[in-house]
Each structure stands twice: as C-alpha cells, then as structure tokens.
Image (cartoon, rainbow, N blue to C red; front, side, top):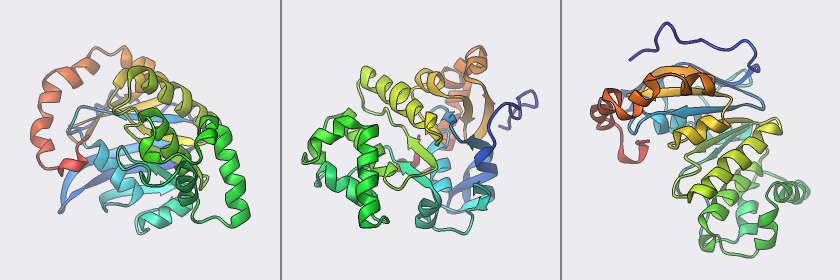
Length: 269
C-alpha cells in the first residue's frame, strides 16, 4: 500500500537529517515485512512512527539497529552508510536503542546498569558521563544501590534510557517506551523525558502504540500500515485527517492481520 501521491514528501523547515532511511525493505527469511519506507530524523527532532499492530514497526527498528539485514534501500547516520555494519558498530557511531522489553539488567543495581551502559568509556569519562546522566534523571541518583528488578515501571524505563545515554548517542531510538505504564507515567515519559532529550540536540525516533500521546510529543510522524508507508506529516495535520482513525479502527487495520502472520511473534508491533 504505497504512500499517496498527495502526501507531503518533507517539510522545508525541518532540520537536516541525521538518520536517513530511503526505500527500505526488510523482513525475515528473505520475505519483506516492510517495503518502501523512507524516513528522516534530524537533530533536536522527535519523529514518531505509528501504525496498527502488525504494521512492521519493530521490523523497521531491527533493520535500523542491525539486528536484521535490509533487503533493499539504504540506512545512513550522519552520512555514513550502515548497510554493512554490525549492530555494535552502529552503536559506536551514535545509535542508542531502548527496546520495549529486556531493557535493563534486573539482577544488577542502578549504578551497575549505568556502568554496563558505558562499557566503551574510560574510567574518568565513565565517572563524568554517569554524573551527567544522573543530572538528566536525578531521581535515579538516590537509587544507585537499588536492584533494577525492584524498580517501578516508570523508574525502570528511566534507567533503561539513562543506561543508553551513557554512550552519548546522537540518535535515540525508543520502542514503545510507554508500554505497561500507567497513563500518568506514560505521559511523563513521552511529554517529559522524550521531549527534553530532543531539546538537548539529540535526534529521537519514537515507535509508540499510544497514537495521540506520540503525536502530541512528535515534530513529524509517519504511519505504517501492513508494512507500507500510508501517510506522513506534521502531527497537527495528521490529526485533522479523517482517514487517520480508519487506519486503526477500519478496514486498513483489519487488512494487517494477514501481514502480521509473516512476522515473528517478537517482531509484531
């Protein structure tokens, strides 16, 4: 289901792309789950990717971070082609990824999780970066010795993001950061932490199931349906479109059921 020709390609007042994805296709066992995906994320910009279950959002993220290879198209960061780079090399180049689950080491303390996040840093730089990260999330400073597995959902998500920030990424990728959080905590994570991180100059790619909350914090948004780009634009413009609701509640959402069957269970989002 290709993007309509009436869709805006880009807005001229958006920042220069840090992350550039062009014509991306990716999937499993050579079978594409997503096709024709083109997305740009600039510095100090939050770009949201939304869509019904089974749209291929998690597959998109796996292709960006290097968990699965691209079948077609390109992915680049600050002008560097990522096609042949392993996931660890992409991390070193500045991609920070916070998964939806398994986002912290449950058996380790908060302090130990941060140390693990900064595994590439020297001793002095590690201490400095830990202090800077705790300034971003000061509540974690009083929990240094607490076991991560005993944190609340909101505290755990803060730690997951803080651990990723230890390597000072230029691009932060968040996969469903509000999942399993109470509504007030979800709003705090999205409207508070995500927006604040982007305002420091970091590019943020946000995949989120809570559509209106994601659009509220985003500068630009893309809608995926059955693995294909359906629409894109400023959140206010998308919210004004009567067909946005149909994507999630109408025939377009029902059409994703068959596509979802081709994607591994852990990849469906």
